[in-house]
Length: 568
Image (cartoon, rainbow, N blue to C red):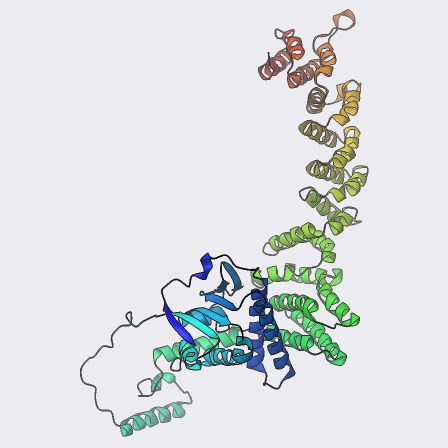
């Protein structure tokens, strides 16, 4: 293998444009990691190992169709190809492929056509040795140099020894004889056995005790072993077997094990493991070949168990009652695996969830499910459970779902005032022609707040098709019994939508006199003045000026305000 020293930069490929999309390279690295795991767990004659290796070689074939060489660069947490991150590994653990290369100085690896047949197994063996190597053994860079690959090139950064502190010399060392070391060790062991306790500090003066670096390494490996999630690794292994073995009996047994594993993980509160299992099941259902219909159905239905109403209600109840919750990251991963059928249950629990740590995560899950499954959202608008219907209506508006208009129109003609109010807001936010047409019936709604909200929506959007309904209310008797807010809303809508054609009527309300010189009441005349200000034409301004000296303070203030906003 040809090697060269590199500067701090990782290579020159990142500034160039890639010759083809990165998807084949991303898939190749996924297959490489899978083959590395199989190389670590199985013997060379194992069918799973052979299948993983064959899949990796097939992945290289897809690359060689596009190019004759593949250059990868390494950072601490990612592997890059040109300007694309083709593998992201945030954790700097022993299993991180990018970290293994980076920490030993390798910054670039170039693979040539033919590598997959001649040398890929040797590279997998080197990586396995590097994972298990102690600090005193060769590092990855040395192993690559010894391998002397013909179809691979690497670029490395010379880390050097300049920063290393010199070893202090405190004078001549005493000549310690072997007999003295053995005697001191024997005494320490005898004392420890007599006390019944073995204390490592009794041995720290011996010549052969571990140094600080070795102790730190061992502690790190022990911590990593304890922190590793073996259940997730078992799940991945089972699905690897399922993918490689096409025998129906084998796949039936694995599906049965996975089903029991899912129940066990849920019962023990291992939510990260549940999320991992469901995510891998979905990926396997897409990758596995020659799937029988019953196996495909079983893989599809396994994630549905979590989203089923009975299971999800029990899960949410336990989370709401729990004093100690799992980390938020685990709960987020779990909620990300919910399916559309969970939307109704999630909506019903949003109103009753008391745990402040779980509620925002449930809100986020509801938003994601609603945005990705508008068909289910529209169905839930007419749900029998009032809490579910309320939540579905609230979310239909911001999502601007045209398909929800018909269901919202039915709500608008129903008896529930709160639901009708929410339906008005949702239809207003959707704002399509069909939504505004459905909203027209809100002008004659029995609830005063709904009428005001509806009329203001039409005013804001200048929806002129509703003018006949507005005209009938403004010129009718019922408006005189309404409060000032409602009068103002209707007259503003009338002025905005009618334009010049409405000046004559508004002038008659503001300035006209009836039998024996009787005028309209002050509030109605003030509303007419505001409406004329909305029209803001020459005739409207002329009508306003007729009452500019009005004695009635309410009318005069409304006229002056309208004149300030009207064009002369």
